[in-house]
Length: 396
Image 1: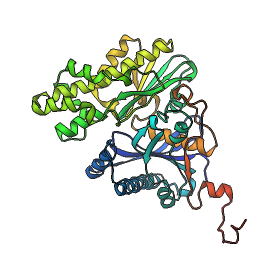
Image 2: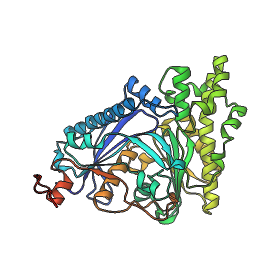
Image 3: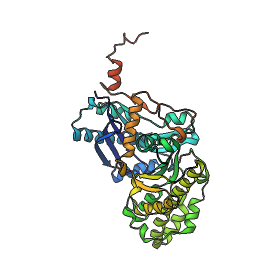
Image 4: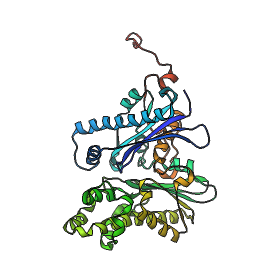
C-alpha cells in the first residue's frame, strides 16, 4: 500500500455534482493523477435541495438519500481507479465530505449526509468523513475548513493573499506573510440564491455565463434589502448556509418578480451584485482589521466562472489595490480545489495530525478532523494487524 495516494470527494452547496480526485502526496505539492465528476440527476438535485431547506424532512428520505449519495461517491471512486489502473489496496484512504444539508453551529450541529461505511465496504478503501464535527464540538464553527489547505497550497512569503471560494456560499481565507491564516469565514451567498432564482424563473439549474443577468440592471432598493442582515455586520470567525440564505430570504422580491416577469434580468443582475458587494465589503473589513495592504485575491469554485461576478470583483478589488487571479494560475483546477482539500485532510487524519485552522476558527485549539470507517483489508486493518475473532477471543 502506498502511503501517498488519496482520494477526495466533494459535493458543494450548489448541488451540481459529486466531484472527485485521486492524488499523490509524495512531493511538496500534491500531484493530481485523475479527476471525475458525477452530475446529479434532476430528481436527485430536487431531493437534495428539498433536504437542504429548513422544512421538516421524512427520515426515510434522509437516510435513503445518504445511501444514494455514497452510491454516487462509489461511482466516482471506481471511475478514478479505472482511469489510473490503481487498485483499491494501493490507496490509503478516501476523504469524503458528503453533502451538507444542515449547518447550525448556533445549535451545536452540522450534517454532511452520506454513508461512509457503505463506501468503505464497497470500495475496499478506508473512508474518513464527518470532518466538521470535531471543530464544532471544540467551540468552533465547523466551517470553513479549507483555510489550512489554502495556506499549504497558495500561501506567500512576500504578500498578503486572499482565497475566495465561490460555491453556493462564498468563503474567504485571509493570509498574511508566510501564509499565516489570519481569518477564514463565510462572507454570505455566492451561487445559492442565483441558482434558486434560475430554477424558479428560468427553469434551468443556473444562469449559464450570466446570460440573463447581463441583460438586467441592478435594483438598488432590492440590493439594500438583501444587504440589510445582521450576519454581514458580525466579525469572524463565522459561518452560514442555506438555513439563512434561502427562499424565505428573497420571498418578497420573488413576489414582485412573479407579478412582473420582465424584471427577471434585473433580479439576476441584482443577485450577482449582492454576491460581489458582500464579498468586497468583507474583504475590505478584513484588510482593515488585520492592517493589510494590497495582495492577491485567488478565486475558485463554480461562481468564479460567472463573468458578471468576476467583473465586479476585479473592479472593486482594483480600488483596494488587490489583484484578482484564478486558482488555475497556481496549478489547480478551480472546480477541483475542494475535493483535493479533503484528500489532504484524509492524509492528515491518517498521520494523526491536527487540522491547523489558526485564525479561521474560534475554537481554543486545533483538532484531528474526521472519523474513520474502516474497509476490510484497508489501511487501518493492516496497521492494527486485524484478524477474525471468535466469541472466545472477545471474552474479558
